[in-house]
Picture 1 (cartoon, rainbow, N blue to C red):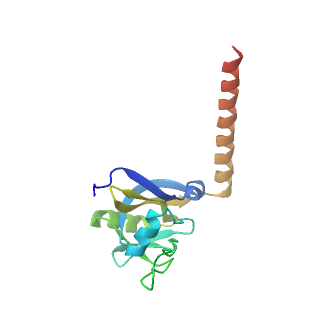
Picture 2 (tube, rainbow, N blue to C red):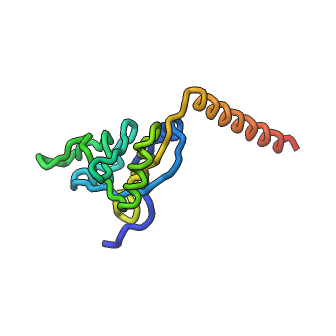
Picture 3 (tube, rainbow, N blue to C red):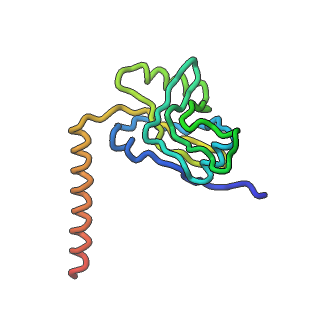
Length: 157
């Protein structure tokens, strides 16, 4: 069987980019059980309530929902279990130092397979205020309207 190539996105957390200012992004491997991998390959996962934490010098992904594998038996996994992240020591130290500062959190942005291995993209993020969210939405809407106006202007000629 040939090795997998490329990147296949399983789940992405679009709400995280709306709710947080993304400071830095890290790619981490995941320690998974067999039925979790099969469920992910079926394209089933949710990052909405997920977050990462540093505990005892190790990085953990918590509250990420990977549903039970449908064809699984008694060996099935718990859907919201704590999963270990595979990061370098320097990355863990950098993240733990930043998380200890007030206002920073670790948020999963996407879950994907890269060359056959499950990876998660976690971000060092700072929470946005409500007025920041409103301003971002207004900027996006203004840009969309300007693009529409430019497109219709070009069709008139």
